[in-house]
Length: 349
Figure 1 (tube, rainbow, N blue to C red):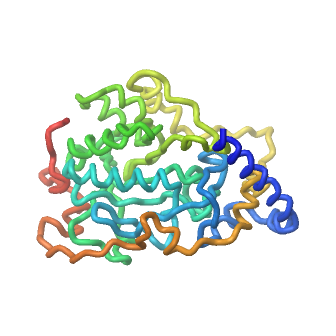
Figure 2 (figure 1 turned 135 degrees about the horizontal axis):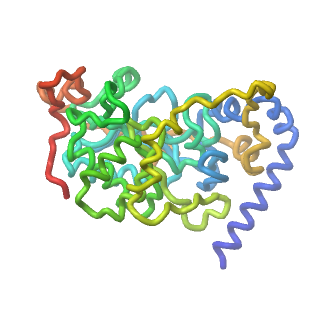
Figure 3 (figure 1 turned 45 degrees about the vertical axis):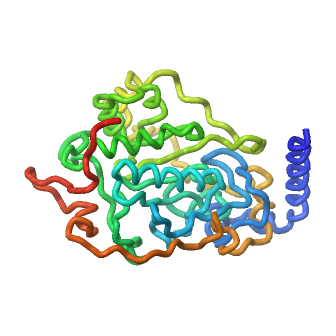
């Protein structure tokens, strides 16, 4: 009862703050929401809470994934998108340890999570707005730590054979890739793991572990260079809009077969009788009302808002070896006789 009352009070406070900052919001309303949220560099000094839906919302009280950890590194630091709900950040740290145990290099490379206060982004994602989504590269963390510049410049590695339609490149894809994706799907707080349709098909054809988890792995456009983890709304998050649960079964059915038809990839046919309409950007008024208060709230310093209280993990860099340099990790363009040496394939578990 006390927790419910607390939630009601917080929601009432958010409504009050929205009214208090009505003048500010009016001034902001002329700018797209992505410009407003993209300009904020630090999180709000408020309790952590996702507000709205994964693709239409914001978040209060975000925490940052430390830039470096024993089994992870955050990538593309200049984007300032390593912020999330504490439950998301805690999961990423746990997943990084589990991935390393599976033979995934020395851990994971983490891409975009969310902006400091969530919301629409200036570039890229439609989702990642409430701190409950995170991208993981299909490239393991090398033993030799990446420098900040390498994290900006290091290219992605696609898991697809680009010479064929929706086909996994078996010279790159290994059993360890499959194990890592399915490990991500195994956590009870994970709602969905998004991958390219070709990768989903490959898992459907080869996975011999617990197939009940395959239903969480969802096919979607892109996602051939990284996979996307989405977690449930945290318990008690009254303002978080839940997504419909995935359908029962492993998802290796007609819903997957549809991706291998022409329909998903065909450009829309123009209607000669319809006047072109300029797309309307998402505005602050399109988001939950509490998002105006989130934007106006005082900032929390980065060192205080970094998960675990450490901005970076420090350790002695490991001595480089030929098998552990970046080129070996990400792979050069492959000839038919070449194979990527990392991660080391292991038996399915």
